Image (cartoon, rainbow, N blue to C red):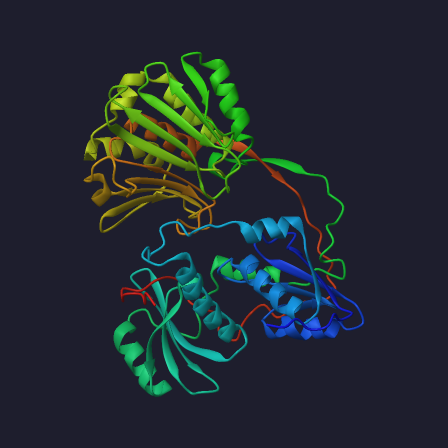
Length: 459
């Protein structure tokens, strides 16, 4: 591919100041209109003069911003990518509990891009939603494309929304939809999901200085539930733990990337991976009946886990009898009840869906899930018996803890108690947005909200 002659156009790509994954482009130069046209064609939204924003429901903005940068460069346009955005482009992550685990990362991206196209078609009024319904906790919808007249049955929400079926006419589509969902069918589109609302907010005008980081406002520290607190310094927390417990010893590996902490009994071991992505596993606790036996149970934790939760875990490992903690607890109805009693006492919502039991806050921003099927597997199974999480949903958590069968019920109960009643601090930095112009954020037909009983496409 040949590269075009340089143009008097410069594009500076940077991360959005308030929306974690969104990307902002600031255009300068006498031929900036050429870059403007290319980005607008690729579904970047104009928020001010020569300022565009890319925001998606699948949080893949850095990937598509990098793709846009390659095309702009090929056209002879100078592209500058800030270090923080470059870091986001280079990081790899996966969705927790992704319903199609057989997909590669590239295939997952394809699925979410198709969902993005459906979302955009609804946003732009090209896909008109006639009705939606609740199907056992899942939102389904039916709509028709303006240009082709094709009617579709939509399944799923956000990055998992798919076209599950097509119809020859709106009348046929509505008749079939009403036959399937007459009990819960409602006219028009379903309410926006949290992700769609956040996406719409990120499209709001940032003003002419959108890509410039404003002066740092005064930070406020607020008291929040432990599960919503800041991660703090995980390495410092580990160092403090080891300084206070001389029966634990720190071992450095041949590389500075990882630290091991081992109890003097050799039955409990902690692995801490430094400088990993906050969404990836950075802590692993492994327990052994004897120093040379197979592993009894293990627990993993991501790097964004709040400081109060991490401290509760470490203190639980230190305060209980090491050998009894290492042996763990057989998974029985009694141990499950004991581990989750703090959540029940705190009034968390308890639901059962097949093999999964889940306890969630009334707001749905944190929860604990027990997988009865995984509990029957051996300790080396890759399936998580327990999943503790907080964030927008269990499918898109801010942080997670997973635990295998035989994990100490006392340790799990300590964590549950902290989630239910513990508190921590979170630093909040207010961001001022210049109200110069507002885009329409309510689509002609907002999208639906969950997955249906029908099987998803695997592509």
